Length: 375
Image 1 (cartoon, rainbow, N blue to C red):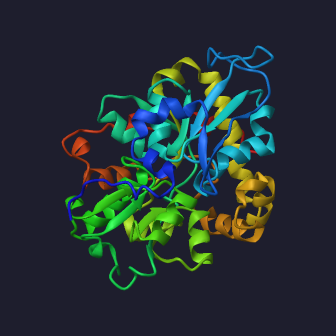
Image 2 (image 1 turned 30 degrees about the horizontal axis):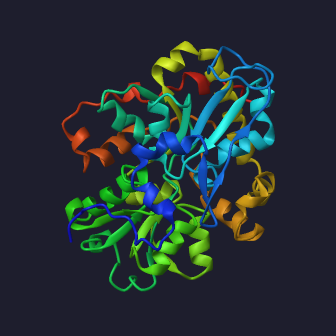
């Protein structure tokens, strides 16, 4: 089967169709900030009140203060939980920041919003910084949320007998959040690692949440890569099985050969250099949240999150957080050898990187996390 990226059939949720074209729709959907919830498109613009540091945006809040806009590749995904939790705990406000959180269903769309200048920061996978450097863009991670992908490759019950490992991806349709997303990257790596060419299977952009569940249930895909709480929902409804689990450092080591720094706050290097005080405050707030997470239970964390995130019920949501907690760092520091693992994974299939010398030191900085308060 050719590797022509597909969208699911016309009777599926229209958001799946949108996920296929992230770069042409990002600006239009940025204004509404839609996200996947119960198969419906909802708007989410969460503003944190406070006072500004150095100016971050031409847009002003009602108080006349400058806003910092941050796009998240799915605010309700557990892998990006620190962003919303920081708001819920009041840590942005405590730093005197006015931050506006926006959401897109896939990390590649958050990347697009950052590159286009619509936002000052993006919460997404660190691997985008390497991919963008190969395209001549200088982007860097300023705080690293995790040292494992937090991703899970699942297969439907119907396909479980024919897919026992990534070597069986040949001829299959596999769901990813968006084409060019980190789920797309990791799926391709798992295939290539096990001897399957990227041209021998078909990635299908299905988003996450209910659109992913619907695609698997309808048979539009035989498997796919997703995160909690989608994984917890699939298992609870007995719709599929786990094939590859990368929610822990051990799972990352087994699947990818080392730590894989994933969710992070990344920004334009030029913007960081021009707004160091603001960046330090952002990092202070996020590191404080990571430390808080390391000393609280999944149930305590779930209780702090917006109630509508627990679509499958409080217990299931808490379980999804518990399953994903091992991926998070406690201090926001880039894990040792993490960038090298990411480079190895991307170069295995990415033509932009195969022939490019990547300067890993330019893809992240630990300057701000090292200055963050330790208490």
